[in-house]
Length: 185
Image (tube, rainbow, N blue to C red; front, side):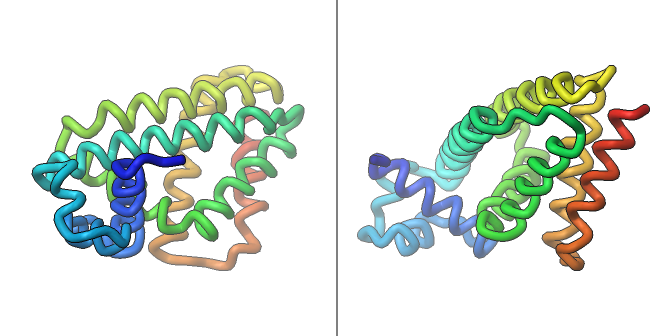
């Protein structure tokens, strides 16, 4: 069961994902969490402290989510890998849209505030380690390089779909083409 602090941080992630980084205030977090005003400020004295804690919590949740995925996804060929990645993209754009929007908001904040980069980088490194193992398993001759290319492609694809949604039907074919091109080269 999450602690009060974790509940507040999860509410803050919701504020980021549904209202944007400008809306991230102690008062907004309290409102979304349904707690008395001043609760978030008791834990996080400044907005910077709140933002730093949100990045840590986000990275923690991201790692936990990918650990679950890595535990049950074991692609054995490029098609299975593409299907798993398409499922991830579909979820990121659908049920997890607010969390995905929050992710990109945090990326922008990290670009402007380098102190926030460390926690996001640790999470990204773990995610890429799992993806590299999947690429090795499906026959990539350069799993590290292919991992970078695929993950960067997926980040761009997701960001583009968030900003300029297109027909969802083409996502599976696009991801499949990208995976097969990289692995066959």
